[in-house]
Amino acid sequence: MPLDLEPAIFRAVAATIVPESVSLDEPGWRDVEQVIEALLLDRPAAMKRQLRLFLRGIEWLPVIRYGRTFTRLDAAARTRVLAHLQNDRIQKVRVGFWGLRTIVLAGYYGRAGAAREIGYAATPRGWEARP
Amino acid sequence: MTRRNYDIVIVGSGAGGGTVAQELSPLCRQGLRIAVLEKGPRLRDDEFTGRELEMAAALYEDGGGFLTADGTMTLAFGRAYGGSTVVYTGTSMLPPARVIRHWNVPGLTHADLECRAHKFMGQNNVHLLEDDLINENNKLFVAGCRQLGYDVRQFPVNIKGCRGSSLCNLGCPNQAKQGTDRVQLPNAERNGVEVITRCEALAIGERSLTARVSAKPAGGKGDPSPWEPGEYQIDAQIIVLCAGAIHTPALLLRSPFSAGLPRLGRGFTCHPAMIIVAEHARPITNFVGFPKSYYLDEFAESRHFVLETCMYFPFITAKSLAGFGAPHSAFMRAFPRLQMILVLACDKADEYNRVSLDRAGLPVVHYHFQPDAVQGLTGGAETAARIFTAAGAVRVHRPLEGGFRPGTVPVSAAHIQGGCAMGQVTDAWGQVRGLPWLYVADASLFPDSLEINPYLTIMALADRVAQRIKEGGREPARSQGSASNP
Image (cartoon, rainbow over all chains, first blue to last red; front, side, top):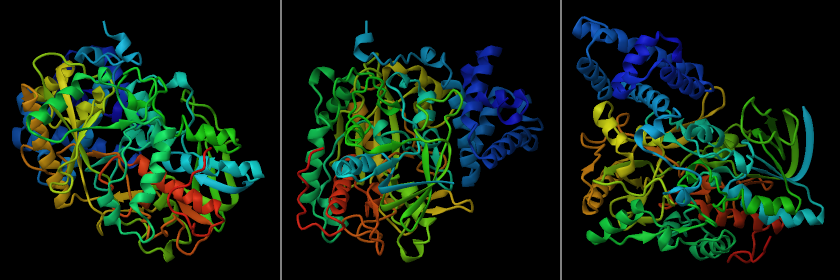
């Protein structure tokens, strides 16, 4: 599991960033998580710690405003929470969200099947591969 | 620690290191021993698969996501046999005369750089791509620019046998791009230069280097290093640093010589860049065909930006679109209908933007967005939007709608420059002040932003450095480019 967190928190955040990810089956999620694990393998331990903390913050922060954790919110409220973090007046918060968002996007769009799903079909054969 | 001895050691094998290696390689026939130390691996041709994350991990430092100190920008630079020339697009631009005048380095003239750059244009098969190989992503940019009366220009490119994979930035899977990995390094090796891959220079002392050779990781790409893994002390009469504008200043900052070089690490620039995307009503040819054929530079001086055509891969595109959720996904799902433009801001060397070291001695890039760079990004994004609309796009992604706020705007850079400014840290021939055995020959020499794609200028400067070394360290009498051939 990326960042050693409960899958529920990570997947709730990922599904808010990439709504299509809700349709991933268990092997699909494992693909996402494997891509992220490989991406973070050589990254500094401090960065991984910060990301873990940030994810925990996302889970518990909504309790103040909504009285519920992030994983127990509906999709619209989750989007509002993440939008708030994305536009926070504190740059470090914005950068933290940016980092997490980047990792989720890498996991989802780095999967082998993602290119096909969005119609991206670049190939080393270039022009010759066109019908 | 194993000891090795060479006459000349070159650190880095990109546009700078590959050029110096080639230009000095005839000296091997006179019995001199020359080595190139390259941190990255040498990949076999069949290992260039075009798969995005796999190739990024193999060819880029930090997979292309090297972060600035405050985390608001990522820097992409290569780490392989051929350095960043393996992952650039091959756009081959002559240095602008006004920029070289602005650099104001005594003894460095535009005519000299242009003459040398022409030599490498010939070697690297630089030409304008034929019309029938231009895809719609590029043609729409031209159409939009012309509709608006802009002076759009075609990039000269250094490709040979391009099949239009569009995968240039992941290392050409067809070996069409004529980087130093295809031209200068093989020339150098034929003449007797040794290239030691997976070999990272850690420290410089008086006419010596400490370096570490890494083992090939399990499942990793590329050949093992020709040297056994371990630490080496390499003695050399001459050392040439070509490790790029982050690692060359860092190596010098870690050295005992840094105290005598007060401008070391200063003057970092990088052309901060944003990818702007628009959707057309119908599919266009975008991920097939050479991705970068046209540019618009008429606003470089007045509004601090240059626009270029581009086409990126799923993850880079996703990362470059601002926002998240359904609006973000809608653009990603429109991929076959997407047109892309790269906005490059012409940032300027200042006192803040610099390379320093952290407590572990690793390089840290401090970068803030100057008002001119912000103006360049915002003005460039607005102009790109106008071009998209003029070209018939039905929807334009506007990442700066809420203004430019670092940390919310996807900014990355791949033209890493400065840190060992020529005329300050080195003389006009790349020799480090006060150290007649130590040279710099890469983009860290740029005293200020080049405002265009840099590789030909790097090669031209590296050619000057090589000439100086060949002439025994004396300042060459002739400064109009060396006529030597490999």
